[in-house]
Every structure is written in structure tokens, then in C-alpha cells.
Image (tube, rainbow, N blue to C red; front, side):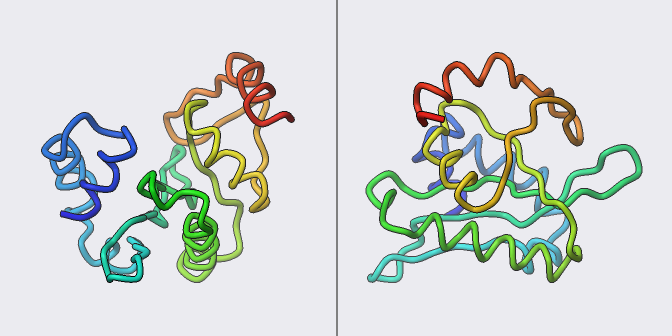
Length: 150
């Protein structure tokens, strides 16, 4: 499965089997939604080299639009494919969820993606969060300031 290959190639999972198990447990139960929300980008040979999922998370009883599992294979990073995926994902979320704030959760080792998110209009929250995610702003910002020069 291409999603598992791509996500494993960027270090999100330690094996394709682990990625497949996650995908099967968390996305396949929502197959109709998955068909509308999972995006891929292909190289010139038609091979899937990047992916993003225009999903949601629950925060209490509120459904929050959220970007899940954005990844572009390393050899294609920096070519504009990631920017295109994020842009299309945001359009998809507006279409499916309405014009609402969109959230995402990430980690400092994804600093290149964080730079792209900031250029796409996202903001780093110093407090608060969504769903079950813990906001570790004060731990992350010293690293991000060095890596992204912000």
C-alpha cells in the first residue's frame, strides 16, 4: 500500500507492516470518508511519492478539521509537491468541513514541514491544543527557532 510505503520512508513508522496496521485500524473503518480525504501526488512516472489526509479529530463533542500524515519521499522534498499537497488538503477541508480553523499536530524533527505550514498560514500555538494532543510549545520553540530561524 502506497500510503504505508511513503510514511515509512520518512520515518513515521519503523516498518510498512506497522504503518499498514495503523492505517487499517484508524482509516479503513471510514472507507467512504477515506476515499474523499486521502490525497496522493505522483512523480512524472505515475508513482505515488507524497500523501496527506484531510481528516478530523474530536475535541470533546466537537469535530475539528485536521491534517493527518503529511509526507513526501525524501528525494522529492523541496520540489513544491508538499506545498501542492498542503494547499489541496486545505481546499478539501473547506469543502468537506466548512470554513473553519484547521489544526495539525507535528514534532520538531519535522521542521521542514513546519516551515511549509507556517508559509501556508498556520500558526504555532503557545497554549491550548485539540483532541488528545499535548502542547509542548516551550520544549519545541528553542529547537524550532534554531532550525527555522524564527
